[in-house]
Image 1: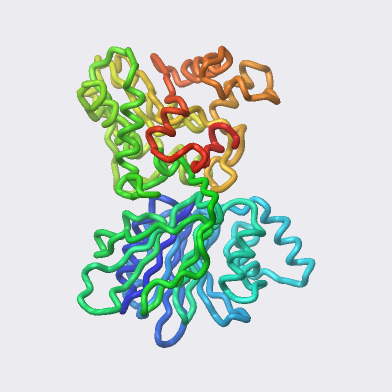
Image 2: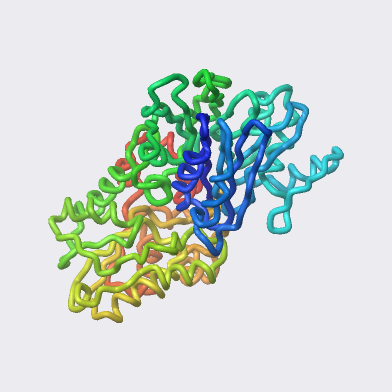
Length: 468
């Protein structure tokens, strides 16, 4: 996972600092800023695994001066990198996942290339992207060739003395939006590019367009220049609306918060469970629970509250022990709300299930819950993501633990487990319910989730749920 932010504006450092910080929910490992000023390129990179972005970069950005800058928060590769190439010097930030990274690296090494930036003992993906771009006839041609060479997904910002190039991944799986400064009274107004459109308003920017699949634009002092048109094939990650995206963001013209409310309404429709209230596991389950409350008429209450300072998402950190610590510490139970209550608990998803079981459900039972009815806002996750570094293997998933328990080993054919109308699907869900130790468990159906998002099925990436 990761997020990028770039800005073209006089004395851009403050905007760059806060704009990048608005992507902190997308990564917990490393972050960096790069600016282009009168003395050339300057970048700074820090680990944020033990400190928040703001605290690590608060002093750095105050010493930066320039009219262009890019920033990144990422779990895989320290960045942005400064690259010296046949196109001149440029700064590069890129997020996503390259599944054929090892083969591409080997091919380049055989051709005589060398790599200087290492990340976790391996090649830094951003440097790999740069070397692929450098094989092009020019920067735009290089970006297009890179996108065609990789398997996976890469969105990038590339800053040269000519301007700031913004390129969305080939199939538009992840967002990249353009914003314009609406507080500036004189031209040029200033432009920004960001993974999260929610980073714009508080900085005085408004979203003016979303880049299409594979589209490349250049931002400079004269405005926005189209460099490469968008492709016709679009497969946007559905999980953006369900979990990973910021609630205040808008992708493809569709509000994240509104989509989550519609998911909750879909879950409540036809759900005959009797309960005293509905709640959402903070933060990403809240929108779904509000929608459930709107449709069901149940009151919304907070049996668990998040201690916000210092604790991010338990899904994001790369190691299980860190995920467990975050899951344990970030939620405080409100015993007076929980004791003796029957509750519907909405969450964005059940990925591994261990955190919900050990650090959420247990807190509710330990504080006197009478009944716990869990309602995830997406279908059972069946496949590890091939396009972002989130779930890393099928063995981690709660569904595959259930299937192994039911079948003796993971079956070669998962078709019946994908269909909510089959007995095998129902057996899998029942196994997960017992494993979680909850009163009932009911997933939203994939057709309901697609309808709640509001894009045609063929324009969504649904790989996590159906393997396509």
